[in-house]
Picture 1 (cartoon, helix red, strand yellow):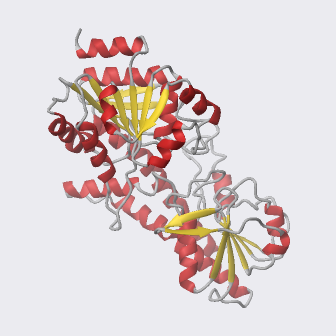
Picture 2: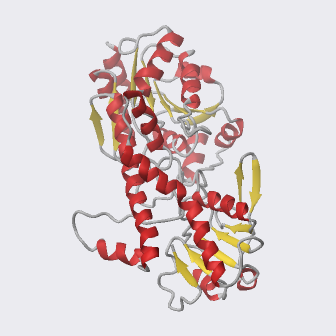
Picture 3: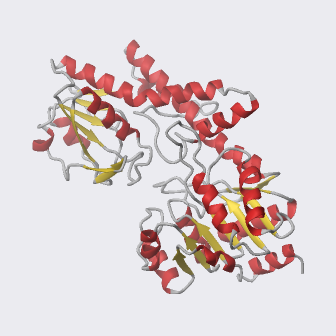
Length: 439
């Protein structure tokens, strides 16, 4: 049988062996779903701590059900390793490693490069390789393909298949998980696209859409998040203008979203956080310069969003001024450092930027987050206060709500008598608003 026919047979009879490189927020849920679907799966990660936790059946990702992980590990359907030589045992491998920005706000694809090199050393004929890490258009064909071919001596399309399928993970989403979120697949060659799509269709419940090339799939992912970045930038700018005009931007948005067509509600905040929206537009802008093109609208929205933590602190200073207090020396409590509500993920969290901006003013800043008791920034751990009460809140000069966790008592926060700066509009239903100001 041909390579294509052999792989299709393995998919159909569930003898296909899967690998996932990177056991983080994207990789671990994907690996668990593959194993639950009946495919023996190996998870690869350079962090031995994660490997040991997986093999002990200890879950560390919110979107993974603890019992599911324990069951597939104990049954032998899933195991983890830091030894990449086991790549030779798999027929399908997904690369789910981070793609952050460096200190110059340029793409850092070192994790993708290093993972690809490690895979290439042990790549065997008849393997499918799929990049899931968000990156600039062209990465799969311009970076990953040459590294795989040079490192393995194999030829793409003849000896192995290569594709790109953008991750779509929204931590904490109660409706859409890896299992039921639609997938997009772009691959080098029609056979590769067909077989790779078949793998995902055999594992996931969401529809799988096949596009003509990896570059289309890469650009599609960038478009998804740039769309959100631009619209959030628009509404953040509207929030700044509405504040100057004495208009409540939240009320404006609520009124606008009554229109059943042509409008989708986005909301302002102290900045952008997470593993995609704050980063992806930089990948596109960086790549666009190769073609002598400046993404002016995208870059404008990025400038607005990047400035929101600083603007938040400026507004906070004005609030304190009304109480005849200066930021310098004031005690400020930031409520929430996770980048979104009801999760423990603080990657690129704007609240951390807000805290840094407060420090620059000389304010004495502490934080409380029921999901994130401590966070690590620039190699240093920062611990929050363990709990809040009316007595504790009254020790501060200003309370700043930066994350809308549902298990925080905002009635108590608003009722403690301390000025409150609500950047998420979670106090909208509180009647006595004398001490409350919204972003």
